[in-house]
Image (cartoon, rainbow, N blue to C red; front, side, top):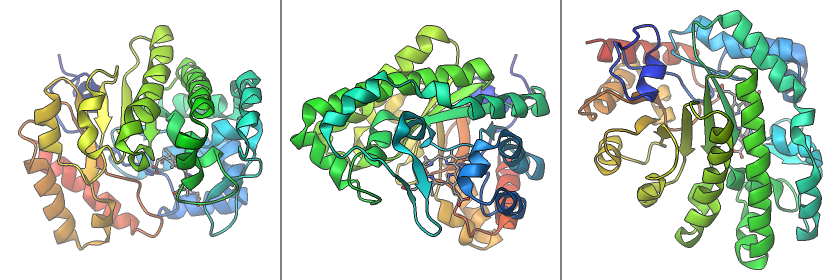
Length: 348
Ligand code: 1CP
């Protein structure tokens, strides 16, 4: 029997549900006034991340304010390299960077020996805190980045957004890069296993930067390390639903066909109905409204939601989301309006 109370889990299991589930990437964040208040209280983003009481509160804020079908753990993909000793930093107005990035391929071996899960106690505490607040009323999504996406941030001289250094390693240090991706796959697998042990209901992998890889390397550097992570997780937790956000997958869609995932999350450049035709009716899809729609009028937002939903022949196995995260300067009232539109549009 489809459970009317958990449309998210139904969609992940490709079962019909009474409504189309919706949650939004970066649903917790600066666009919410209550997030800005807690962040000001914490002083900076890293303190917020590492103080479970505050991280629990921020995880719950969007599900209190909006009619969302899942909560996502408030954390960041860069906590693992931080726990590996690279030391995560955020300068105001700049993106994240590491104080001790990997500049030299000789540094890789020492990364195999470290045990980041020993330094991520604050994550397990946040999960316990969220679970005891939501009492099973909403599923909680745990997450990590894919090995390639983490490698993009870890390799190089300093903060840069084009990840050129990681791309050079494809040819400069191919053996060491592949070694790094394997080490990361193990650490990421263990990290997700610990999150599941602590109580998350679904595990999501963000492959945010696979799209910058040349096609010749997409399989070896993006897909195969993801497979290693999933195999490691599923050896311990065979029934945990998994979602892969394959940003920039474009024409390489066929390559996910045999991955052990329940759901593929897509960015806004991809056509959902064509993807369904290509991948068939067993893999759930999540996505993929352009997050910039949130800058439009209510009329425009409602039109875009309608168009996206109409493009799906069958809403079974479909989870409504954005194609990327909500931007910090979006009007939160538009986010509420969007969520209500999805529910109205898919109620029947
Ligand atoms: O609500 C939620 O979605 C949960 C929290 C969450 C998640 C899932 C945050 C909080 N970050 C992430 C994932 C994340 N972080 C990704 C993968 C998804 C994606 O492609 O966006 C990536 C690439 C990051 C790295 C990161 N952390 C960036 C992007 C930098 C870049 O290279 O473009 C930024 C700006 C951060 C900081 C961050 N993480 C999260 C928040 C709310 C913030 C902003 C901090 C603040 O200003 O308060």
